[in-house]
Structures are given as structure tokens and as C-alpha cells.
Image (cartoon, rainbow, N blue to C red; front, side, top):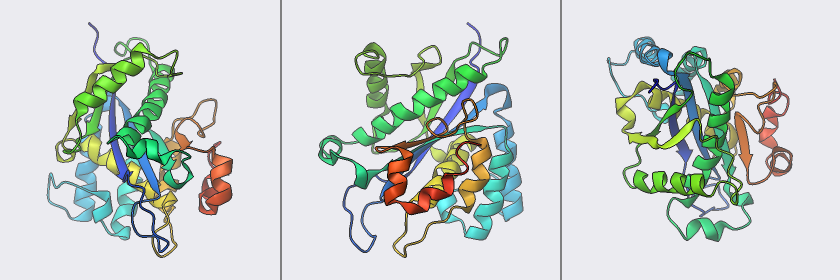
Length: 267
């Protein structure tokens, strides 16, 4: 059997709660699930990227990096290094207050996360299919999620197996020539450079869309990452950037701050 062609690292930012207080506290309004996709032959370059970042920030070698724990002046050079790495990114941005049936996603633990994973892996599979170079492996991807200790990844694998079996009636658009549910795993964030980079990507887009309790967002990090977004025929919206449950224009009408993406999603 030929080697795999891609490695995909997945992490999230935000939570799955639905307790929204008027002062902005409570659950996050947005949940962002993001993937950093790299050709397997380039995977070790992510280790070097993190080594460079740690050296620049004065962190100890092999120090685990959490984007949220850094100061703004540290996040900026970190994300610049991430943006220069040989990766493509896919991000699913879910605005929970716009969901018409939140009860459905509160009745079963981690259902929203699994739903976001479906959207994410659909687009990851299209990216890998589009970018596969003949002779570089079998076109398939190794999928590595950042481990959430409270969640069963066997259930996630089972969910993907169900999607594969029922792809047509459920309108699942994952390219199963790329994604094999048996090649999905979960690893602690600290163990892999790629997962720490996926964390930086997810957090960057989260900061750009989730209004904090002071009424502010920070879009600088995500702007550095926009060139890494997966594009199909030059279009990022719906591909490297997937907004849900409403389309981008409807969400923009009630979340004016995301207009920052309007002129950039078609780059």
C-alpha cells in the first residue's frame, strides 16, 4: 500500500454551550473548528516552525504553546510564522445564537462538535483531492484531532462510519477516497507541533468573530492566515471558510464585525 499523502491536524476554539448572558458572559457565541493541512513529506517542517517561534518568544525548547495564553505582542509573530509554513487551512465558524434548533444540539453531548467535524472533513477532503500530486502517496489523509479528554473519539469514528454508509441520503459530501474513518485519531495537544499550529489557527479565527464582553474582536491574526485558506477557483467562502448555520451574508447582517472578511474571502 502506498504511503498517505497528507496529514491533517484539527483543533477547536470556543465551547458548545448555549447559555448567553446580555453582558457577553456565559457560553461563547461562536464555535470554531479548524484544520491545518500539510503534505506528509513536509510534516517535519512544522516542528521547525515551532522551534523558531519558541526561540523568538524566549520559550523553553519543547514548551507547549497555547495561543490563548500568549500576549498579543507574542501572538502576532507566532501567527506570522504559522502563515509562512507550507500549510493550507480550513475553518468552520458556527454562530450558535443563529441556530434554529439549539435543543437538538443540547440533547446529545458533543453532537455540535461532530456536526462541525463533518463540515470540516468535507472541505478537507476536497482540498486534498484537488491538491494531490500523482506519485506523492495514495491521495489519502491521516486525520489527527487534538484530544479532548471528556470526549470519546471512538464515537467520532463511529459517527464518520455512519456518514460513510449513509452518505447519499444524508447528503454527505466527504470524499471517502481521501478520508478513511479508520485513519482518524486523537493525540494530546502537547505532543505534536501540528496540533499546536491548528490551535493557533482556530484561536485566530475565533478572536476575529467572537465579540468579547467589552464589545471587541481582534481580526489581526486571521488576516495573516487568509492567504493559507483553501480556495476553489479563487473562492475561500464555503471552502477554506465555512460559516454556519446561516450563509455569510445573513450572518453579516446581524454580526457586522465579520464584514472584515467580505472583501477578502474571494482572494
